[in-house]
Length: 125
Image (spheres, one colour):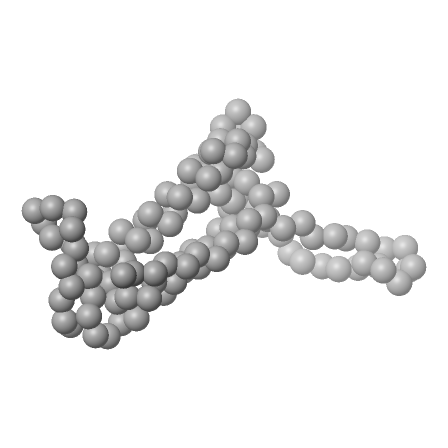
């Protein structure tokens, strides 16, 4: 069978709905009061997703798997009631700095979806 592992970091302080304008930040850590500690604390604000598939995928299957990962992130934000930081009347679909990576082997056999049904067939590359 095919095994899929997904690793996600989920910081939401930078939540955004589709089309919301983005912010940018520079990371500067300063000791403003000279007491020896960093007075500026950074809060997690991005969703990083890594999808690892143990079976080679056709180019079409890679595109579909990537799209499903992004759709799942958007659905999770809505399901958990995450609102846009710029417009709280809208659901967030993620953050302004999200990243997603899909990893799968490139050689050997891969699964290809048949046009006539939803069952995939294994084919040698």
